[in-house]
Image 1: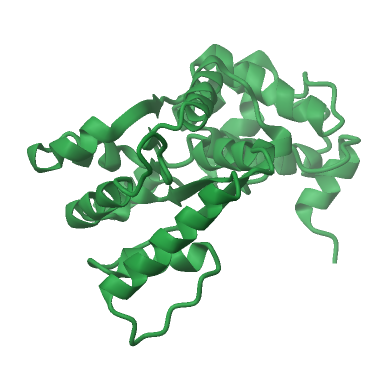
Image 2: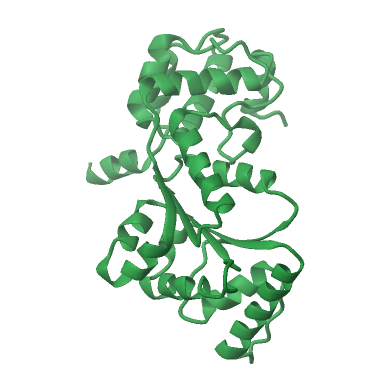
Length: 285
C-alpha cells in the first residue's frame, strides 16, 4: 500500500521525504545557533574538557548535531553512548561499563565496577586512545548521579584526563547544574551551549534547505505559508518538520503545486498537527 508521504514525494519530484521526524545528519542545517552549538561540542572534545554540556528544547536539533559529531570523530577515540539513563548510585556505573561493551555480573559491587572502569581507561590511554562518554536525555539524571559523573572525571594521570563527558539534554539539565549542591560539577563544565529555536528568517532558510536536499526546488512553500509555519511551531525544528510534512501531504492530495498559507491553515484547522500546547488547550475545553 502506498503511503500519503510516498504520494507527495512522487508528486513533487522528490527523492525522499524532506521533513521526517527522525534525526538525520545528512539533512543537518547549519543555522548560526546550530553551528555555534556544534563548535562548542568540538571545542570540548578537542580541548579534552572534563564535561561538555549541550541543552535545548525538545526537537531543537540536539540529537542531530550529536549524531553528526559522532560520525566525524577520529578513529583514535572510544565512544560510549548512553541514552535516557536512569537509576541511583551504582546504576550509572553499570550503564557506563555497558556502553563500552564491558560485561558486569549482577553480583559485582560498586568497587569492583569502578576498578573495571579504571583498568579500561588506563588500557585505552596506554594504547593512545581518548575515551568519551556521551549521555543523551541527561536531564533525567538526578543531582546525586551527576555528582557521581563528576567523580568519574577524577580518574586521570598526572597530566591528562582519561575520561571526558558530553551531556545533552533539555533545559532542565541546565537548571540542575547551577544548583548550589552541584557547584563542583559546574566547575568541571568547560564548554556549554544552550540551543535556541530558529528565527522566522532561519525557518525559511531551513525549509528551503531540506527541500533542495531532497531534490526539490526549494520554493514549494510560499512566503505566507512559511510565516504561518513559524507562528505555529515557534521555530522548533521538529515541529517545523511535522507541520511541513502534513502540509505537503495536503497539497499533493489537493493537486496543488505550491504549499500556500491556506494549505497550512487547513492542516491546523483539521487538528492533525498536534503539539503539547494544542493538547493542553483541548484538555481545558
